[in-house]
Image (cartoon, rainbow, N blue to C red; front, side):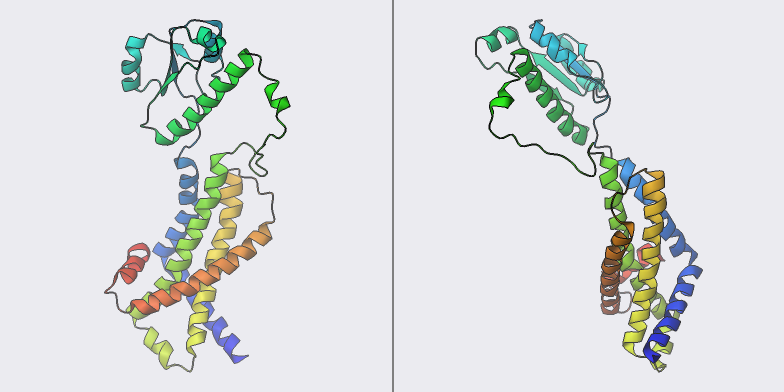
Length: 297
């Protein structure tokens, strides 16, 4: 068909124009390699080797058991300090958590009372502070129950909810963040590439040549969507194989072709939106057009 032949010729022109743009081509490579890697490993949401100190005013078997329960790799061996040093170690940043065990803690527990522990948290590392405090709370409660020989309580409960992670059983944050970063780059470049292609035509004055040629508007738009969509899809496949699987060591248990098929549908729908935005933008006097120029030129 004539329509398909015209679209194919224009698609080849778009791909050739993109490959000749070294800045945009280099930006695409950096985004689907370094930026994905940086987003995956740059934000540490795991608790690892966190410093913990304990103010043990009780010095009982239970308090020593609680101290010994804080183990690597999440926590360093707990240091016992005096209460007067709490502010100093927190200000120095040597200990992210300080647990204050009051006097007669074990005796009050055995009498059926509910004594309170104080957990001081260095909140400058917000993510680790939140996750680490949850870990410490769970450890203290479970060790106290074991000490009181309450392990059989769970066997007497008729229904106990159990949560299992199927594809990321260790809840490794890098596995989540790598795929999330890949989707972010797909969305960004699906919009930017096709918009940059239209704006490049306007700035170089070639859009008028296309409009006076015996071409339909659908052929021009379809070629830009197809060419830039294929470029983003190819970059996605390379990033999945190289950055995600090889460099970040993220196992992919599902079907990669199925993922790429879904990504193709998403990419071509977003590139169509990019055509609309770049068309509405008109001359570079508004924020949308300047956004394309800022990222791509």
